[in-house]
Each structure stands twice: as C-alpha cells, then as structure tokens.
Length: 487
Image (cartoon, rainbow, N blue to C red):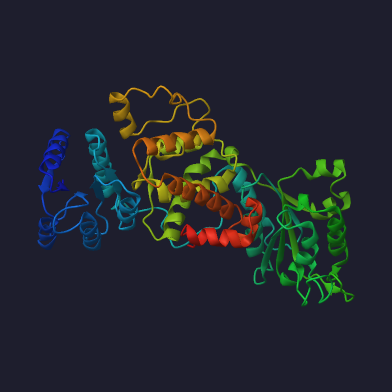
C-alpha cells in the first residue's frame, strides 16, 4: 500500500498526523518543504494521498497541488490551512483538491477524510459500467416502463395522435421524442412547446404564426410551431392548461388539417403529427367544463401513461448511475460511484419530482459530494424519511463527542422540516466560526440553486425559467454570468 504524504512546515502538525495515521495502520511519510515532494515525483514515486498546507516557505500548497495534479491527475490532494477564507477554498477546489481542511481540525475528522480519499483513489481504477459512448434515450427495467417501450415499438410505423399522461418529471417529452425518432417522420423536425409556459395572448401566435401588422409589434411575418414542424412532429406539452379559445382553434386544425396565421387569410396545410402530454386529469377537466370534450377525443386516439418513479423503484439504481455518468461527462469530470447505503436511501425516497428530481440530484452530487464515492451522509437532508435523523458525518460525530449542544440550537433529532431552519443553522455555524463574506456566499448558493432548478425544469430554456421564477429575461442572463453558470 502506498503511503500518505503529509507536507507542512509546522513540525507539530506533521507529528500529530503521523501518530494518528499510524494508529490506524496507514503508512505515512512527512515532508517539511514542497520541493522535497517534487523531488520524489521526479524520482517516480507517488503517494496514495497527498495532504499539504497552503502557506509554506518557498512554495505554496496551491502550487504544489497544481503540479501534483499535472503529474498525477488521479491523485487525491487534501489542502490544510489556518487561513479559512473563501478565496483559499475556491482556489483549492479549482485546482482539483479532493477536500479543504481548515485548521485547527479535529484529528479524527482528518483521519477519516484521508481514509476516504485513499478509498476513492483505489476506486478510480475500476471500470465504469455507464461510460459507454452509446447513450440510450430512456432507461427502465420495471414492468411499467417495459410496457411503455413495447407501446413505442408498436407505434413505430404509425402517425397516429398520441396522448401521454403522467406526473410532472416522469419524462413525457422523452417519450414524445422516442415516438418521433421511431416513426416514419423521424427525418423531419421535432418541435416542442409548453402551452402552460407561454402567456395566453402570445400562445396563438406561437402555435400558428402571424402576418406582418397583425397586431402591435408584429413588424414581420413569423412562422408558428405548426409550420416549423412541417414533415415532422409537434409536441404540445401541458395541453390541459391550454385556454378554451385556443382549444377551439387546435380542434379545427386536427379536424381539417388546415390553419391560418394570426391576421392571415390564406389557409396553410398542417403537415405534422401531433403528440400531446399533460399531468392533468383531462376527463375531470372535461366534466368541469375547462377542456373541450371533442378535443379530448381527438387527442385521446392512443394514450400512454408514464408511471411515477415511486412505482418503479427498481429503476432508481440504474437511473442514478446513468445520471451520475452523464453529469460527469457534461462537466468534464470523472464519474462518481455511489455506495450501496446511499442507493438504498434513494430507493426508499418517494421522489415527488420523479425522474427529473433524481436527475437534478445527481447533478448536485457530481458537484457537491466531496469524494469519488457518494455515501449516505452526502445526500441532502430532505431525502430522509419523515422523522428519521440525518446520518452524522465524521466531523459532526467527533464534534458532538466533545462539544455540548448550544442552548439555543434546534434539536438534531430530526431533519429540519423548514428549509429556512437549515439555512439558519448554516448561517450560525459560519458566523460562529468567524467566517467572512457569509452574506455573499450563502446568497450566491441560494440564487445558484434556484437557477439550476428552474433551468433543469425548462431543459435550459432561459426565458421560460425566468418566467417560472418571476424575474426578467435580462435578470436571469445577468445572474447566470455573475454566478459563473454559463456552462
């Protein structure tokens, strides 16, 4: 087993870590200067984990980290520093640090972190089952999903209208895209529009286009989605929220195969297959008088129901590994592994946001989980079953053993039911530790979480995300740039 290298000009730090690691039967070597480590690299020697201070005479830990990652990209590097400022942390992570360990640190926490880094290093050599170049559009081994796949296969030679039902986040647009790709219209365009996301007074023009001068601001002729989808497929998402007057126009298009642009007098042929989707109970909306019965029957030629994720729990491990691998490819990083305990916790969660929520969670874990192996304690607290306490991290266990609870602190017997409680706890921890820039740090993370979630729900469409968040299009663009979320 390769040794752990500890680099620090403080002899007492080296001594403490040497003793602690030796007690855990972990081989260790100490260095007082970064140059000594570089000399070992030149000799072809490599550690299992590199633990280094930031500020040392001659060369900084960040410079050593950069050089170590250049020579050995897979080497886990843990940065130690007594200067717990934001710039140091950001600089360490940007340079590829495994974790950032502020001084003074709990020795048990440090040993646990080093052991975890060593385990992650050994995992990096294992092949990833999900790293195939061939990316399936949809995944699922549950019987309900297999039935959906069979239905898509049966419809492969059909151009019939299809109505897809299912809760939000179950993947209705992916099913529509699969129906298109396996249809005679596969060579034509696939055009999708969310009828609930577009203001009522603009939706007619979006669907059917408009002539120049048809209304104030119509300075040029514009082709609508029906024209854009000519020869292909038009996907009408959230059809249950379409206004009644537009339902009448859509019914006429489906009946006659013709439509008019707004302000136009020349009929145009609707050469497109229509696939609609909704999370609403359309039969109930028909009974309430908010959805036309004749349009419902026009759309309900063939119906496909997508099961929620809690009805196909056996697919959660497969989907989790797939989304982790895909998130890693998108970010240009190595795919993370997930432990059996963490997977078990995921399969127990109900996922009200369905597959979309799981996908967003995997993106979050790819960025925020500290190591290559995702443990149960790395999962967000809201994934716990109601009333079950969140597993303590090693640092929290060690702190709890020596620190009495603050008299004003909320009980840790259960995860906070209100996210503002968790925010207050995080703010208390940072302020008590004397951290600077707490306002900007937490506000930036809050805004980034909102933007990531909204853009995930809208598949990256900024205008639609801005509308959902209730902010302007220019505001969301500016925030994305300010927070460095352009990628």
